[in-house]
Image (cartoon, rainbow, N blue to C red; front, side, top):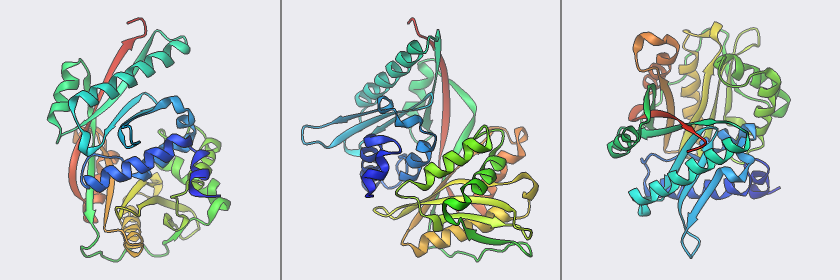
Length: 319
């Protein structure tokens, strides 16, 4: 089965086109605020983006894509080609997305619908626009980190008896999914069964490399921490999505060692840089767990590229 046939089962033809589009965007604007191809594939794991109505492309007569609108749950994603990035096009994509969310809410018999949007601190115009539109900026935001892989990479250091190894294919999907659910509970999958289905969907993505789906194994064979590394072979940039540690194994340096191992593997496969995004609660005292991730990323050499803020608004379907 070729790449496009595999993709058509997970996100449909829209995902095929979207992967090509974001690759082109990153080629033209390497440090721009664009999704990585790994982001798109990770989002498609629960089947919600199989609905082709949640994607919309705007193209020139020659077929070149100018913009992409994407509905991920209740979140609006507006992506514009670097050479055609204007406020008018952004508003065009956003209008489509709002209308799509309204139509979906009406079809489900709902009286209102919520909308989530993002704006980065290197785009103050977008932040101001969303605030003028009455969107509430939430306290939690995201740190987007970048690391060049030409810089020195320390060897991973693990506690005695712990090891790093890749997942052994679909035979270990259930075990890998349980690690993922425990690491991110109460977020993520609602049940272990749902988590396993999502893990199997991820494993069928054409850019998924089982050798880059890594776990830290405890001395008794329990998976203690895990991460997936994604490759963009065109732009030679990797992505960590997700990275998580089971609660009982935290504060032992496992995530740090895991990420160093992942960075080494990405560099061996020709990647020149890597990305990772971490949640930040907005106030240090709100959550030790959330703030700890950024310390891990900084410890392995990632540097802050931008902050991404989340905005929220509730609309009535009758309006």
